[in-house]
Amino acid sequence: MRFLLRRAAQALFVIFGVACVTFFVLRLVPGDPARLMVPPGSSEQVVQAIRIRLGTNLPLLEQFWVYMSGLVQGDLGISFRYERPVLELVLTFFPATLALGGVAMLFSILVAVPLGIAAAAKPGGLTDRLVLVLAMAGQSLPNFWIGVMLVLFFSIQLQWLPAIGNDNAVSYILPVLTLSAVLIATLVRTVRQAMLEALAEDYVRTARAKGVPWRRILFVHALKNAAIPLVTVIGLQIGFVLGGAFVVELIFNWPGVGLLALQAIATRDFPVVQGVVMLVAVVFVVANLLVDIAYAYLNPRVRLGVEQ
Image (cartoon, rainbow, N blue to C red; front, side, top):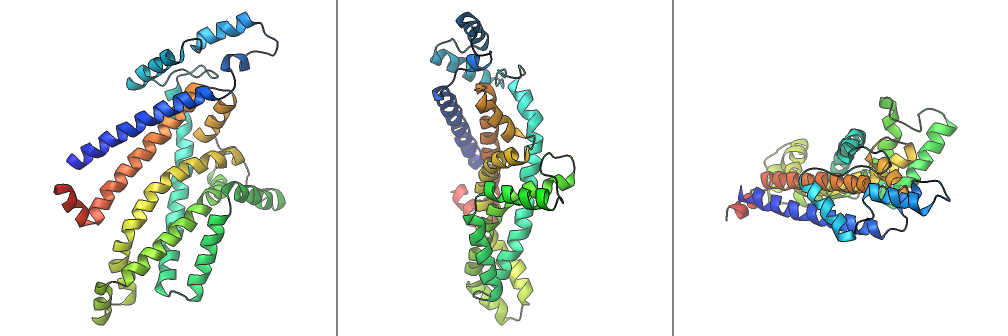
């Protein structure tokens, strides 16, 4: 309980810091939301009336106080563009991003773990070298370039897969491949290195001396210890998946919070941008809290350290 309370206090501090930084950084971005909402050449009186309606005419610290007061009560404000509560708007678009990120993460784990184990089973062999080459290529190529190439080849050239939208299961293929490329490369290298370290331990040599089957050593004895750094990396990659989803959603016109945030930035819709950032921050903090709990479960020494 002390462990969870300490982590929860740290999470609240992080979320507060994100809220402060996001609020003030957005106000430094050039562009007046009120002027962007009216036709060019509109009078200053019309622009000022919109500023009053939006609340951007208030002093900066007073705007910050209004925002933080609402945030404490669960109110993220009203969208300048859509004129709807930001919380309602963000929760409407978030399931699409969550589905894309969840499928990409699951696909990456299902691909990376077997490849990492296969590479570590025979280090220096043909499989190991091919896996390392694929991992290096995945980490070297940016996901926006991968997405564009996939669209050009599979959607325009071959016309096999749709390039936009999320109407059916087939629509997930190209966005998931784009989002998973870098993630698979990172997880493969992590699994391979962790498995190599686990296979060099004394208990593995003892198991082999006792005649334990090699497959059981890999998937039962070594994999559990190798899963400790893997869980940590997966938790850290949650932020990468959510951040990468913004670019992927723009390329494939995916109706998620990434596309919503990019449109809000273009129109200086400050409440929507703040709402999306806060949602991503909360998801990232909760994911890391779950990773800490899983890490304590996998590594008994962490539990002993907490009890002390």
